[in-house]
Length: 449
Ligand SMILES: [Zn+2]
Figure 1: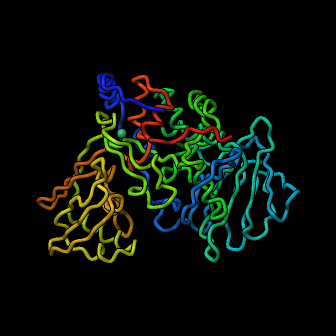
Figure 2: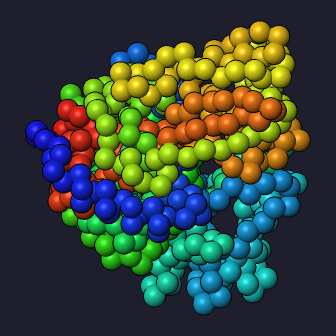
């Protein structure tokens, strides 16, 4: 499909985005969940993907494994279900026989085994730390409540680690099409338009199916329910999000007969990133639809398209040091007080892909753009979360009087669909096919199942 960007429509878009800027508060943006630590997923990491491997198009609807809760520490516990609900518990050793429990059920990891106790005080027999599955037996309450969220489908509880038993994961087992409305409604503002939502549904499905294909035999879950993967709010009551998912059922992004992970972020700031620069060099990411859209995007009037943040230089230097030690980058760990951060390379669109960082003793290191962002945002090792995180890795930096001033563009990694840009295209009358064609050039839009 050929998409010709209509210059005449730019006035409409500007007016719309000006209004949008007024609505979009920082906290609402965080809810968009697109400040993704882009290097989180091994699908995307350097050198970790077999040569030429790319995920197949899903032949049937995948059963997604979404980690919705990660409890920490011995004695951590969680409540599952409601007081009016009956819940079936199954384990591998009790296969075929369910233990029936009255909700809410208290689940805890003790020293030698699980402790599972129902509202009537009945303790379920579970062998050691074997994996547990739970499902609702109440027809009028088919979902399971964990914390503040309601999850359709079964829950799987997996004890983490071997000797330490340092907590457990709660994993929602949910068919793709049931999962997606809880993603689409969390990732977009509720008043955004139907074509944006349909494009988002297809991008999110393509990303999730790709993670599912990669992690199937590698770990207990495919994605988290947080911005590390994509935000999932469980069962949601937002008709437009359900409609967007139903209208695009089974539709994914493809290229050369294989799946394209539909990476997306909040705002590219005008210039797209290539997946192999911003996410990771791998055959999965090295495809034309993820190579970065040419030319300026239509999101540049969004409030997050341009921003400035000042950081005290001393603490910024310590963040770089701590990040370097954690990542085994001795050269970064050994940097003294920072003196300059300069763009070393840009992609064809002009977005920085590598920086050089020098200290006052003229030591110099190179960092990829996303590593620069991660280092500047690093917390842990006695460093608190920065008051303002760098929203993207597209920055120019001025160091003066013990302050590093960052002038940045956009929010998120900038690969694939730009949510603000998609909405401005939709406002100008663009349908979801053309929005996807704009952000994933050359991708096929395929009904896989
Ligand atoms: Zn954009």
